[in-house]
Length: 90
Image (cartoon, rainbow, N blue to C red; front, top):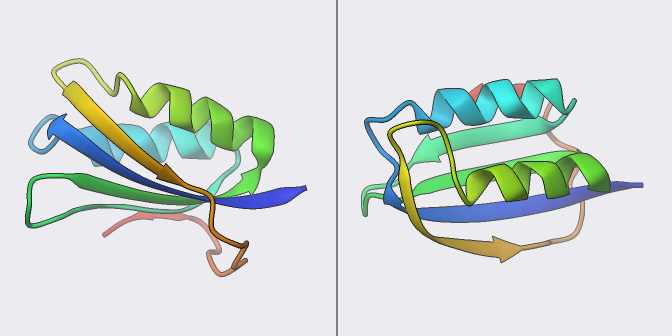
């Protein structure tokens, strides 16, 4: 069953290839959506796909790539939107 995941990741998450690593991980998990930097220093990740893949991405987001220091992850599971053909960086 497809689901929709929304993450706001806090900490040292900009300038450490967090978005690019998130895209690589999402593509490995066959997820669609996007990752983008926010003006407040957080990274937003929106992903759609099968629940096991989304949970794997969520677990990854708590650590991120080498060089990142994650201090918090806000999680929500909004209704599925089915609106992304691939996973992109914005």
